[in-house]
Length: 221
Image (tube, rainbow, N blue to C red; front, side, top):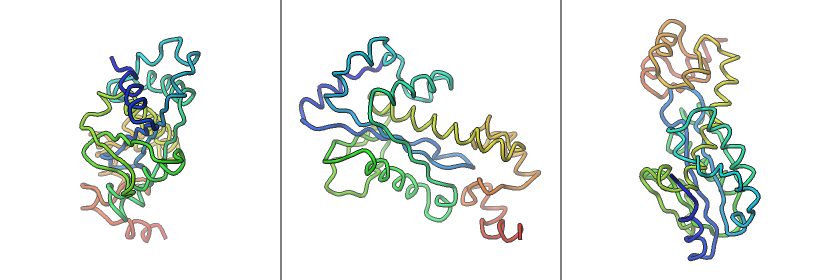
């Protein structure tokens, strides 16, 4: 079970806030990538009334939670901590690459939430921010180790899933509400039969072997 004891001890030691970051949607064939951020300081943990029902005991890596549980926890997380999620489009990903898209989203989250110089904690191997003066620490599997990163993971996943559910109403034939843009057998079959839509990432295989984004839009004229 994750809890926020590590964060409380670390905040007390370093005497500054923690900004936890995590992404969702690095690998799908369609849709945006999302970066979630949660800002934690000593003041947040002093609001005892927000933690009395024990919701925080259910926080975990978003991939290990049901969709229903993620939505429930996202509401609690947003109530307890300053937070933000930024989506960066498939068009940006095709033009600049997934790493640049994640950096773009992470920096917007940072600028939206932060005043000062927090410790930035990130899930994975990469440092998301191009701000040299900011102390960034990355942790492989961090969303299964740190409560704060798990919270960011949940927010990013929920926001992106909600977006893909909305896009499923526009393009029902791709079943985005089920696959969230990932390359399932039925999704790949739909792409094979129908071709891509503008939500797809044309820089990702197998789409990059079929058409470019430019040729796709020209074909619609």
